[in-house]
Picture 1 (tube, rainbow, N blue to C red):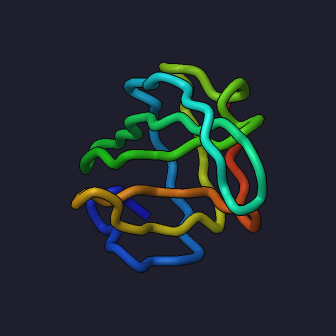
Picture 2: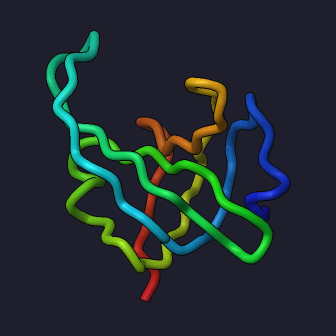
Length: 95
């Protein structure tokens, strides 16, 4: 699937792209406890989307990496679409 084809509410998303930018890591409190979150910009030849990294994903993914998200989902946050891996999805750095 291409980034330009993603829509808010999509689930079971499989998409590949390059991490063009990696933002600041923030500590946050969730209903599951304290964790870290980092917003990145994922791009392919069709467009860009914010990819949200949580916890251990943050150290595994670096700016410039080509990644594959499997079983991700798309939601809207602050009037922009975000791609999340979630607890049932995976993110892999491709070599």
